[in-house]
Image (cartoon, rainbow, N blue to C red):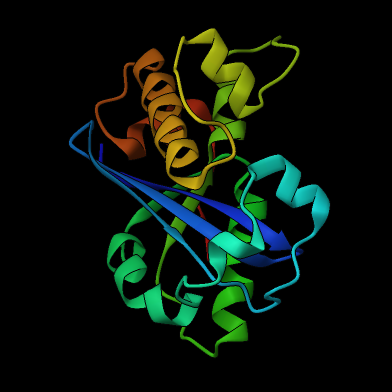
Length: 182
C-alpha cells in the first residue's frame, strides 16, 4: 500500500500557489510536505480563492516559482501512484503548471479519493474532504495543501481498509475505481 497524496491550492484558475504531498509507504504515512509557490499570475490573486485558502499575494512574494520546486516535487510523484481528492482538479493544475513551464510530464498513474469514498461510504450527503474528515474525526487545517494531502491519504487508507485490501491494486480492483494516467 504505497502511494502519494497530492493537493493544490490555486491563486487563479490553474495557477498553483501551494502544493502539498503526503507519502504513504506500506500503509503508513511517512512524510508530508508543502511548498508555497509564487504563481505565474503573481501578484494577482483571485479574491475568492484567497478567501478559501487564506494565502495572500504578500505571503508569496518570496516563494519560489513552480519550475524551481519541480525537481523536489517530481521525486515524490514520478513512477508512483498518486491520489487526490477531486483528482480531476489537481491533475489539471499539475498538467497546466508543467505545460506553462515547458516541463516534461512524468510517468504517473492516479486515482480519485472522492470516487473511492463514494464506493465505500455510500449514501453520505457529501463526499467532500471536510465531510469525510468530520466523519472519521480527522483534524486538519482545511484548504492548506499539506494538511489536505495528508487528510486525503488517511481517507484513502481507511477506504482500502474497509475493502480489506492488502495492496493499492487490490483496493482499486475491489472498489472498481480505475487508475488514470497524467
